[in-house]
Image (cartoon, rainbow, N blue to C red; front, side):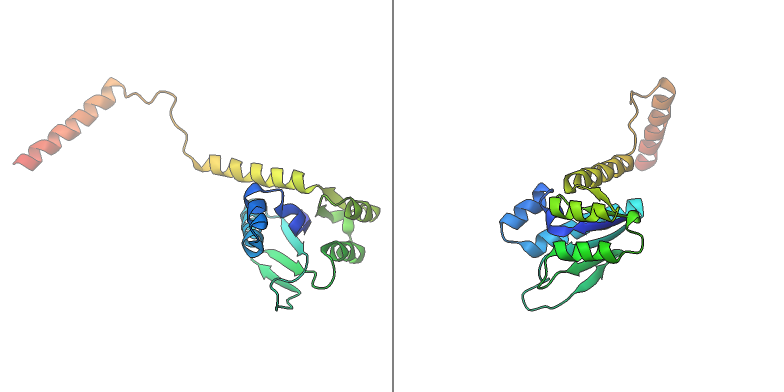
Length: 169
């Protein structure tokens, strides 16, 4: 799957990142979103292109960069909406791209090119569920009844009794 993401639109769908935005910590929020996306990509193998409004930093005129498998674009003097529309307009096969945004104007525009659309809320939920499922799979299963049977108890008693004899010799 190829995703074209409206960056700031998605940031506000994660409470921790939204909090950073309200604290004026734009770089931290952006970095937090990229970290979430990197982990998601590792699990899914999807390709991600993300567009942020404005500049990376005040005095930096960086148009694009990469963070792992993520292609990052900054709109500079344009809006992210404009860049997203341009990417879809110039895409040779826009049907293979899923645009992630909750901006109704972008949704109307990209659907005319038959690009798929997933709202930022839907994508944030999908990402969260994927990460939670992966985390659950990393926890070893617990036995339903962790009690030892008589044979196991006898084994451990022999082991510990043998160990005590050796240390006192």
